[in-house]
Length: 397
Image 1 (spheres, rainbow, N blue to C red):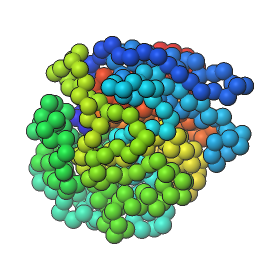
Image 2: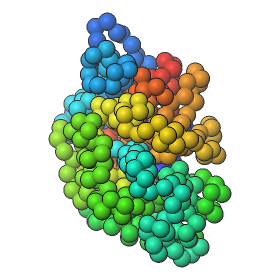
Image 3: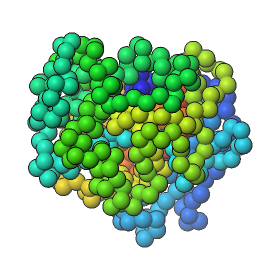
Image 4: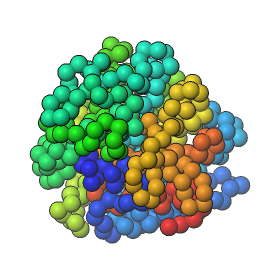
């Protein structure tokens, strides 16, 4: 994700910054609520507003209750949708539809890294150099000065590879249509990043960088001897029964059921969408390649915030935040962000964006209320702060 796109997509929950673009889109909204609970009208209205602003379709799910064991059993689940999942054959987005979750991948990666710390297989104070000798060097970069913690909370200062001008052109301008199936290796992405000087000295600022999580994925592989995606599968997906969530690797296909994914380029405002449902997600790798559903994302957050994935000490480390310097005020932990909403409630979550999809998942600290949303286009507004305000505060922005 480019610096502009990544900050807009990934941190829109935190900054209230929408993506560039905007056009008319299909209207219509549907919701499914238990007969004894007629709520979430504001959330549905916020989703419909995104469709009016140009997003083809939006799907959302909210979960309330403390059991965290599955639908029912005292937990209330609401599903809603607006717009269409497919511009060619219009149908409402569905909660079971798979979509690319972009930088929401980072929370899974951080979780595995913290599990490895709990097992004493690494320390967050370890340097990148210890695990990946010689990889972060040159142009002022020095992996001996960057700790694993600084990767996870984006205080490393390492340049975001997706902001490299040549790569940005291939990923986020019309050239992407010719390069959408290109394969990138993680070390290739890191080499692109370290061909630039650091944004600042390690620990001397905050800057969102996808390179940090590519490096984190490489560290997981070095520590375990396994692909990072296998570690996510074995440590998170299988234990939680997240059968709709996957780490696709080089596979360009979007598993069914799913809708279509679209993109509108910044130099083509108001033009028809390009269908980019199939892409090679190695461009994002551990920074943003995963696929999931709103239901699986909610289940992941219930388990994470509910303490079922990390020991108490590691969860406390994950939720220890640094100031991003962004306004409205936002703080970032280890693969997760904190935002205080207008009603005084603090929600923990992350946003994601990749060609063809944008997403948001968030929840309150005790895991009693979580919500996940997905939109099926990049390059049009996706105001995730409006979604959070509507769902958790019951008010529209």
